[in-house]
Length: 197
Image 1 (cartoon, rainbow, N blue to C red):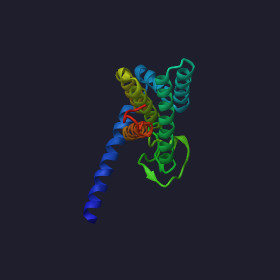
Image 2 (cartoon, rainbow, N blue to C red):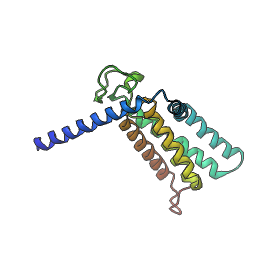
Image 3 (cartoon, one colour):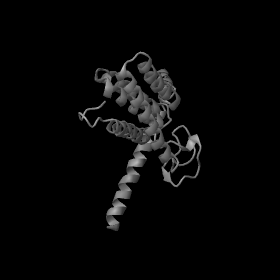
């Protein structure tokens, strides 16, 4: 058993080393105009813009008497709130320097030591938000799935290309966003017809 544990630890260390090298290699492209534009687009996946979008969608649904739009807005709002809580809970327990912090160790460490933005790389809240909002919209408007998925993918890639997060930070953020939307949608499920309302 100890041998298995040490072998798993070795694989995890190797994977983390690869993640750091890949993140640093992508970060070296940060001066490219396309990468800078990506970074600006990625900022739209921050919490304030996403909460504003969700709230405005829900309000528009009520004002225009469009229940599906109001439901989509509520789903967006609840999913983003849950994703924010989940990523915040993890960030308070894990230290990881961001790729754009060039000094020090970039390995993740549990047991929070420093609670400042440069040490809050894991996981990516922007990635979680982009994915949860994209999934929430597509749940009520399946025809928009292609556009929302593409926008979320660009926002997630922007986090890595702008040297704000390592690839694993973004991947875990994606998983959190997806899970948050699924949980909220399950809670919104109507018991009468088994369908999402």
